[in-house]
Structures are given as structure tokens and as C-alpha cells.
Amino acid sequence: MKKKNKFIMIGAAVGAMTLFTATAFAYSPNTAGYDAFKAVLKANHASEAAIESATVGGNFSVTVDGQTVLKADGSAKMGEAGGEHNVSGDLDFTLMGVERQASLYSSGDDEVYLVDRTHDLHYQVINLDDEHAGEHRNWSEEEDSQDRPMNKAEEALLDFMVGDLKDNFSVANQADGSKTITVDISKEDIPLPLRLLMDAASAEDKVGRAHAPEAHAGWEQIKQLPFFQGLEGIDLEAQLPELTEDVAIEHVRLQMTVDANNVVQGVKGELEVSGKDEAGVTHRVELEGAGNISGINATTPDAYDPAGKSVEMIDAANFDDRS
Image 1 (tube, helix red, strand yellow):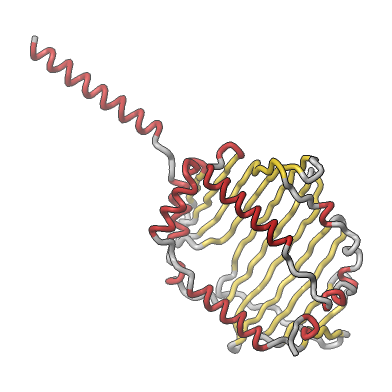
Image 2 (cartoon, rainbow, N blue to C red):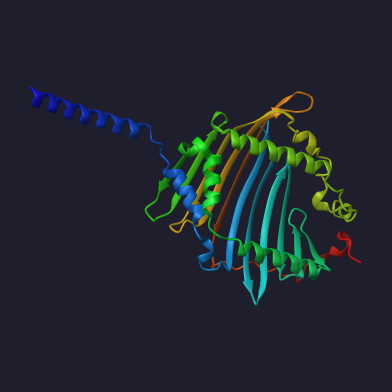
């Protein structure tokens, strides 16, 4: 009888352990997507080969109450030649039905051309400040020096901020070792620390706009260029209402594509916000954007050829307080 009871107890224990294990697995969070996301942040990209050239593309749109206010597409080629930083790029956008196309060509710190492709007009920016250009170059170098992996303290803070959202991350692994990491968050899922952080950022942004400096007088001349004609009559404040009450993030979706070394190749994002303006009218604002990088160390920026073109000069000294 004792032997039988012993077998019963062992059987009950095994059954209990099996039930406990099954329950634990059933309720354990699936954090593979979040772990893949952190792996990107923790990757030491500074140890990778230096990026000397690349092509960057992207698009962006703003929709308010179902109406598209802004839609923009652009691409830029960046590279070095002869010790100089060269850039060429195109930007096409539509703002409240008004379409504009522009291009930029930059060679080093002292040669910049702007092309208004909408009106086939060409401009050269002159009198660029070498001192300010040097500051920009030092800033870039400083940013590069800060390209380091996330440390333990930052990882702990990220874990705290994300909270229970780890289940909202997913990852799809490709045969070539690349991954697509997606995070999809609805209004109800946003944790309190994140909501408090967003509220603080919103308040800071409002203070910043209230104390924003007035536009320099030189910009009034720029606004007279044909490129901006037709845009000056658009009331952006009316088209982009300031949400002051019951502001809530309805939905956030972020998709990131990385290669086998966890280097970001492309990003897509969607943000939907609702709230009331000062008049108490409810609005819903949707922001969508995407960016990608390609042609790493295999990109040659386009060069501007002024031959046969009528090029107007824009004096950069008129937009600064330099003596």
C-alpha cells in the first residue's frame, strides 16, 4: 500500500510539474522581437568599416482628419572625393495641393547650388562662413565619436520604459541573415512611464514654440523666390491644428530592417494622434514616414554643371549677423 501511495505521489508530482511547466510557457512573454530590437541598439557599429559614401532615401506624409496636408519624397547621395564632402539630392513635395521640386548640389564647404526644378531656375549660394562650416564639421565628428553600443544602465532604463510592451515586438528572420523587426502599439498598450515622457516632451515643445525667435529679415527675400510663391498663402496653423486637450496617441507602428550585422537598412513608422484644439474641436493627425540606406561605399554624388545655365547668386551673409 505504501508503495502504491509512493507511485501516486510521484505521479502527482510529475503531473504538477508538467502542468506548472506548461502554464509557465503559456504565460512567458515572447520577447524574441524585443531582444532583436535591443540587439540593434547594443551592436557596436563604431567597430564596422567606415561609411565613406551612401544613398539615403525617404518619404513623409501628414494627414489631418483624413485630408493629406503634406506629402514629401526625397533622396540624397553623400560621399567624399579629394578630401571634400560632396552631397547631391532631390526633394519633391506637395503642400495642400501645391507641388514643388528642388535639387541641391554641394561640394566641400564653399560650393553649393540650388535648383528650382519646378520653374527651371538655378542658384549658387556664395559667402558661406568657413568658421560656421568648421563648427558643423566638428559636430559631425563628435557625433561619430558617440556612435557606441548601449550600456547596461541604458538597457535597464529601456526595459523599464518599454515595460509590458515587449510582447508587441515581433521579428521575421530572412534567409540571408537580415531581419525585419516590428513593434505595433495601440492606445491601451502605452505604459505610464512612456505617457509621462510624451506629455513632458509635448509641454517642452509648446514652450519652445512660444519662445521661438523671429525669422531673420533675410528670409523675407528668400520667400519672394518663385519656388515659394503659392505657398505663402497656406495657413499651416489652420491646417495643422495645435492639440491642447485630451491628447492621446492612438497607434504607433515602427518597422526596422537590419542586415546580418544588425546595421539598419531601412525604417518605416506610423503615428496616429487624437485630441482637441483650443476651440474644443476634435482632430485626428496621422504621420507616416519611411527611410532607407543603400549603396554603402558604392555611391558617387551627382555633380552640378553650370555651363549654359543662368545662375543667380544668393548671398549667405544676408542670413547671418556676421560683420
